[in-house]
Image 1 (spheres, one colour):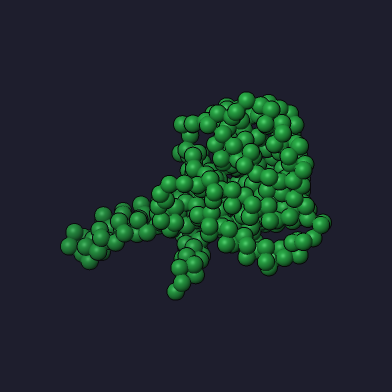
Image 2 (cartoon, one colour):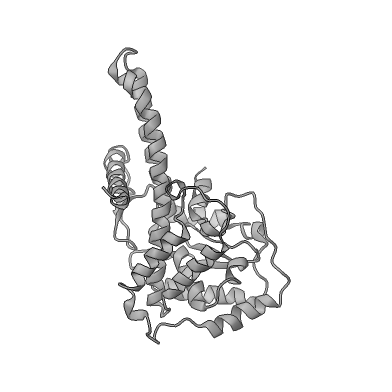
Length: 328
């Protein structure tokens, strides 16, 4: 079975197992449901209200860890305006969220989302882009993380996986010392733990690809040329450097992989947007409202932080890493 098909098969199997097993234990309306943005069924333990509350709490003081918000009102308001334009295209069924878009005064090339609609976009990344459509690609990607409820899914899946391992350990520990269950269980469980953790990493990679897809959808609905998403990936590819671990052990796909997927969407789903003047790039507007005002400011610091945000241009979206810290 090809790797991509195998990953899809086991992902669906894992979701089905969670829905079946945890559904027996959780007398709650929250559980397996169809996500309005993706159309897929997934296990989510936590409510939208919980996401809004946790996102708001996590956002408090977060900007200061990244140099604070850019003080020039023109580029900061520009980010908010484009972000709010994009959220007009989110799917019916996603509840009203308190969307906030913040341009951080940080030289780090990054962007990230918190549950409930808190989006952060660094000056370091903004200065590398060349069009409003590219910025819409970044913001649309982050909006996609929120509407797809990736943080909620990740924490729910991790809970289910840990619950299953704990239950298995209890059963094996209670078995007779000379039984086959004890004999083989002591060997199998560590292997399952390792394999499960690799599968959880694949959820991170799948979330990034899904957010790319949703970002392009929101771009198209807002009248932007989705090729801006490709421009972002090419910037990130050029900015990445150094040795990298194998992709299957990474929480995010390499930019090359995302570029391939985006090109596929541009030639199929969004072929009608290419060469169509109805779908804009807005290069001049971006130069005037973003690049020129930022160029008049002192250089942005290359901020370091003690949070779990990823400090790597190749892993530009820190969403998955941040969700782990929120669950602690």
